[in-house]
Amino acid sequence: MSAITSQMNGLFDAEYFDIKSQHVDDTFRIFVGKPAAIQPDTSYPTIFALDGNAAFSSLLGTQRMLTQGGEVPASFVIGIGYQGNTLMEAMTNRNRDYAPTEPGENEARALGGLIPAGGPAFLNFIQRELMPLLTERYPVDVSDSTIQGVSLGGLFAAWVLLAQPATFKRYILGSPALWWRDEQVWEWEEEYAARHTDIDATVFVSAGSLEIAEHVRAHAVAIAKETPALREYIESMIAWSDEHGWPEIAKLTPTFARRLSERRYPNLKIHCHNMVDENHMSAPPAMTSRGLRYVHGSWAA
Image (tube, rainbow, N blue to C red):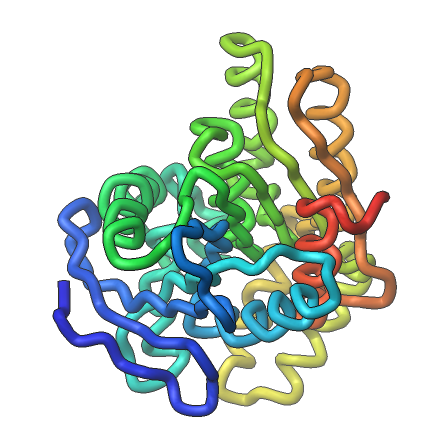
């Protein structure tokens, strides 16, 4: 781990440091947003944001506003990101870390190439390296934690929920890529239910209401027209999806919540709320606000 903690200019009470993971064999950049006034002898909840390079500052700002409004408790916000000089460079390895199982041809096309299934190693990093380090360095209670993941990050969080749910107390699943491996998520769900009788967690799951085939295809066509550098790749994806089917995350999210609800796990609280008139890229800010309020009990669905 780097001994240097760097302050983040323009973000009050925020800093970052780098940690070399033994489980992943890569270096992560960890962003830390602290409560405004840390009280002595107090341990604070933690909110983990995947895609930290892109999502940390937005989630931190939303969390702080909701804390001022009394809807979310004062917390440490932890963004898990990567080193890099640009956002695209920093996010190069997120597909590796968020893939819970080996990708097939459809997944490889969507992600721009074959990747290893790094999800299990990434989960080990969070549990065995990052959480102990945060406990050592900050007054945090990692047993009182929330994870937010969007898209492939949402798939990773859904997989954790169905594999090792006690890792986090609260889950915010934003536009989770539940289409992965022909909706392999239902196999995970059935396997968990066959071996367990409870999930002790509060879960908010959401997508943009426009994340259905008609709108996703139209958006892809528009991007291909407006982005010459990506046109050939996107047009090949359009042709593939026309033949094999388009992902419709807005239809999968309520099914996910309903299936888990029907198990009647005594300590599971789960709700799906799709964001009206939002798409895959525009929905996350709304998901963060509504999700944080739901999992902390200040918004009753």
